[in-house]
Amino acid sequence: MQTISIVALGVYRHVAAKMEVPFEHTPYRMAAIVDLKSSPEAFTYSAHNLGVVLYALHPPPQVFIVGAAISQSMAEECISVWKAYTTSAGTKDPLLINLQGGPPADGNWMLEIMGKLDGKYKNDRIEL
Image 1: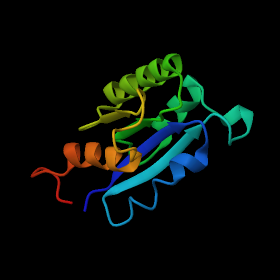
Image 2 (image 1 turned 30 degrees about the horizontal axis):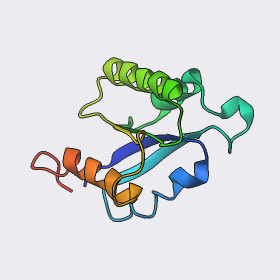
Image 3 (image 1 turned 120 degrees about the vertical axis):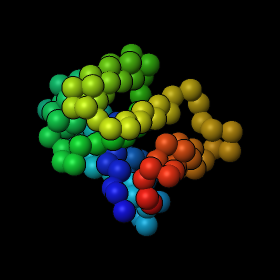
């Protein structure tokens, strides 16, 4: 089973970390969580720090999740960093999941995320 590495950006680390349990018994793995409040100030989100995380991880991340509570300007900035990284690193089948714009109709963020992941990676090309 091929592992799909994920990097998430959220306000609080513990919120993004809740995704780890639903990822059990799937090919998805939370490789890193960049946050705004839970880490020491020098290590919280900045475009530079996100770039360091993306380039340092091995295997390289294929998925970037932008949390719903991230501001529009910060979302634009981090998405720009993600796109530059995927182009530079030659990331195969990258996926951006931007959770801005309000909660899903059923309020289930995890179902929304899993649907996007499975929609991209659960197919004939990748054996799950």
